[in-house]
Amino acid sequence: MAKNVGAVDRVIRAVVGVALIYYAMSTLPGAEDWMVPAGIVGFVLLLTAIFGFCPAYLPFGIKTCKTK
Image 1 (cartoon, rainbow, N blue to C red):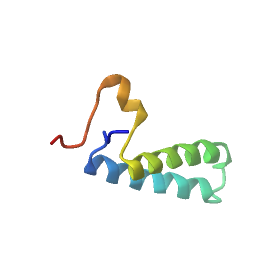
Image 2 (cartoon, rainbow, N blue to C red):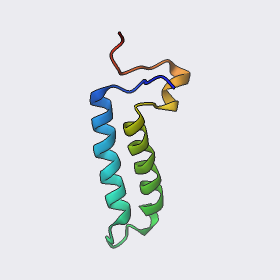
Image 3 (cartoon, one colour):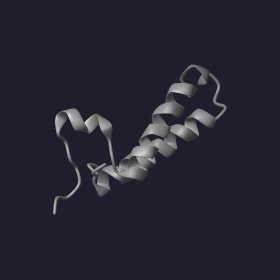
């Protein structure tokens, strides 16, 4: 699995992922409908940030990491 997510992209994914997971775990009134989808998206973003690989980039040939 070759990395296709660059450093800036990884940081943005990690921050947004943690924020969505925090939102999903919060007890805000009226947020019940969006808790599970937000948690799933946050978890996926966090995983792609950790591993540096995004499967959604493959069909489009996108690479945000520096090439050697």
